[in-house]
Length: 431
Image (cartoon, rainbow, N blue to C red; front, side):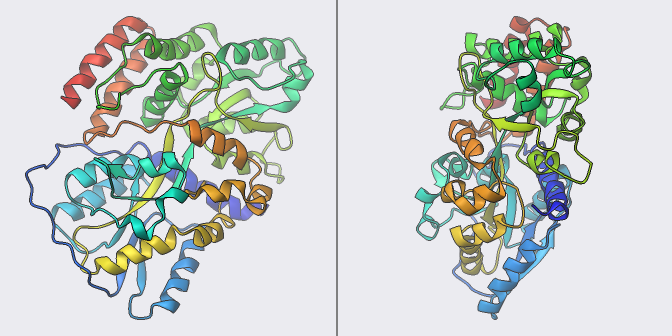
């Protein structure tokens, strides 16, 4: 695989992962008037992230050649997710028509749809049945599709094949207990000395909310039920939080990882300092680098996240595409979205970058699997993944989770107290 190409790809994926933390707030503008829709055609803009590989530019150029009177101009948004959301919100608040097609983080759908800043999409143009079902759900709000799935992803478990083999561990863990047992065996080997067991993203930011949600789901619980009510004080949710608390207390999760975001953990794993690591798909390419930057090239593999009693459940990430409610050429915007998320164009895009895409067929495509061997594992993870809360006030939800989970893993609160306090906090945000 082209290392230089993947370096740019990884940077894109990192920016996307960081964007997971930049989520909406505010109330549901139920009383606001619906924006005017139109079937007008003409030139449009595409507000998206930095195109570090140049692939999006190529795909847009292909569209422009075929549609000379409906050309697309790319507008690159900031790499920082908070700044991206702020820029999109500011444009929507003044009803600016500067953007026609906008790229939204998967958890921004509810906010932008509730405030009527984006319009429902014509599903007949998109063939929804061919998307990964979990990815499709991230684009919906109150049963309607407002954002077409484009980039997706979920957490997967990276593990050191060489260390497990040296310790006599025959298969990667499917449960938390198996993970802990495997680490104990590795530490008894000469190769395992000085190697920590497991780390995810445990700093106080959106990554902690994601890791907490995954732990709850992997214990059989849910942060919110189907009606949007918090369920974080259930025995299953407490078991998920207990996994994180016990991990730090017992040393399964090293204390220093309380400051880990995606990149800190990635570097630790890539430098050979972790047996197991939870992260996104972009790490695979970087850890496979043959230029000397990775000490684990050829010495690792991936599996779905483990859980309390069996395989666990990751949290969905990703970016989707929506039509701005203030676009002057909405028909062209809708058609461009259908083009860019189509199977053939996604396949073309996927060959040039490693961030997972939303069409299910790509995960069974031999050519794509040859490029990205982790795809079958990722598909299993995506099928079992859960979405983050569909909440207009998502930023407040995430902040509450971060506050109370941090209090628990730092020992300032018991699991029972942190869970009860979090239940109260979340109830106040969703009532």
